Image (cartoon, rainbow, N blue to C red; front, top):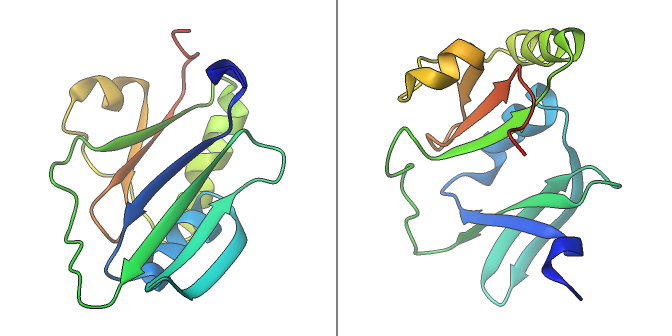
Length: 132
């Protein structure tokens, strides 16, 4: 399969998977696609949208500390160029109790809003077209 048509999974560890659910499900509107416990020592969840070409996986392993994001510039960026859709996405995050944070890179503050999850990783809702 050519890489251009591959489905992308972004995976990372967490010390508290359940603390991430309100941010990604209630705030960003992701669906809980799958949850697993003790799969070769790992617990985890997969979040996404059934027809999207990507999903997020968060895992935890007993006895292994994942810690917080190493920097404030660890980002997932979602481009929402339609002004109404962008405003609705930002409002959804705010209704779920998540306020925007100042971005490490000021570019993101000029073209969107940045939000931080329970592990310190950040998501940008960009109000611009993707450069590609």
